[in-house]
Image (cartoon, rainbow, N blue to C red; front, side):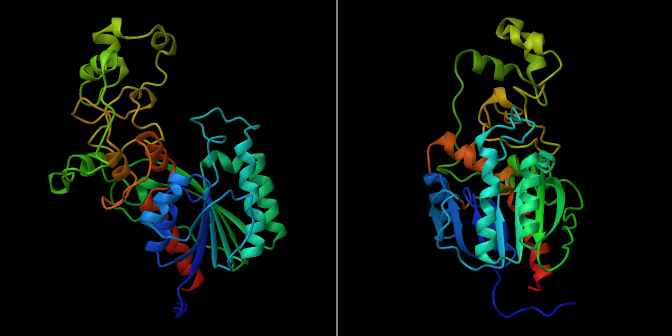
Length: 330
């Protein structure tokens, strides 16, 4: 077993968002020296909850690059996700290549790139892999599900690990059993704080409110169509058995489905509260991402939901960070 080092390992975070990947790295013992995020509200959330080292800028603006042990990056995934259009011409896809000069200038021993699993099959990933290889990195990939790492949510993510210190073993699952959504949403010992500015949700009105009231525990749009077809648009009949999770209630006895940026919109997935006639609150969505209740986010509700839904579940990020720390001898 390697001897632990006296100094703290350091990292920089590109496309940092609100800081959930960074939070996991900090929990694993790393010190952040720089975070780069182009969205000002997300950067404020990062500064509030993780570190003041965040810079509001594009990763394409390469300047004042610190020397770090690890460079982490979560480039935009929308162009690769199966939940989106998977448009190979999406201009956001190119952003993953912007981290290459950062890897060279930061002299990082390890570069960690997080994204959706289909990213690993894209031409952009191949270009990134080849670019990192030219810089002297050995490339491996992991595909991990957050539910295996103490997260009450099924969320598969890919991790590209570029290393100059040899191969790195992926983290072993840390949860003996899956944590259910009910354990964080309905647990009486974890009551939501009165006046919590994050425990809010948009109030449904009109047809939306009528639909929600008809959905039984564990139900979804199929129940609405069966009970009150007059409340259903013609498109539901055309879609048929597809997209059955929309207008669905979270099952408290299972991990939640993947939390998206639109988790406060019932037409986007199974995002209705297990027993109450409403969508999930911002705090409830945060809990499903493993975010502590003492975190707060900057911005209006939808941008905050986007910050939450775009992030890596903190317990998963922590497990990945610990594997990297062990490989570095920390």
